[in-house]
View 1 (tube, one colour):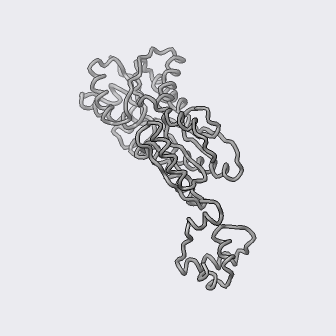
View 2 (cartoon, one colour):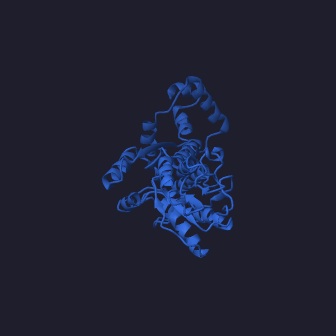
View 3 (cartoon, helix red, strand yellow):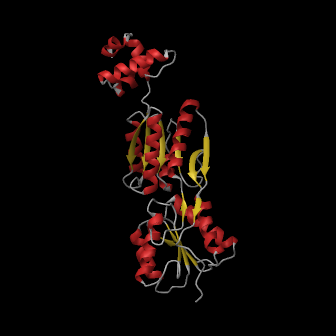
Length: 327
């Protein structure tokens, strides 16, 4: 820091004020210090800065499924937004969903003196555990439906499922199955609720949803079993990967999508537009979700405000849906 000060012709206190982004520094002086830091390739010691300022400028993310497309896309968006705001991000992944595992993951984040926490773990057990902890820091939860938190941000999963189901009904389908996500996932429950609500409102008979595991492999084997009876003309899958497996099973049975069976997915993963046929699906704007999450969290850090919000999904109609063929 003294080397930077000498090169910039300022005091080391001025360099410290620039590093810590403190006010009342002339723009020319600040730029001179920044240029000197770049010339000397000086990088501030984060731990030392935290000791001086009592701020780590670090955001923690609690994640239960960062390998899946949605959470991974949101985490990337949060990291990008945090970097622009001068914050770093550290992530703790939950190994299993026992309460002890969840508490250990949160403790690892707290040990790094995080200033705020983002929860991307849409299982009820995670939120039940959080409710029993006294965390004295701003928290934003990325969840699908209300779980009692007044600091949450979500994509409206119920509305998305209703859009998907309504699309099939408006095409003339009456024998519609729902391939749901795993039990205990808030998102899976919300999408199942949206499907059942729309079917009931439209007075269309329903069958019990089939609980899946989000994978294309499960979609494939579920499709093979369903085709043994083939008492349906359309399936709403709770995510695009299971929809892909269903389409594979239908092709293997020498049937056509959408000529024989229409398929709707959920998420709009990057590959969805390149399935054959391209998949009709519900688009969640994960990038916007992550960006808005960081904006709300930083707002909370500065003002201590309570906040809530919901992002509306959109239906993307592609080639995997059509009116039911007459049989």
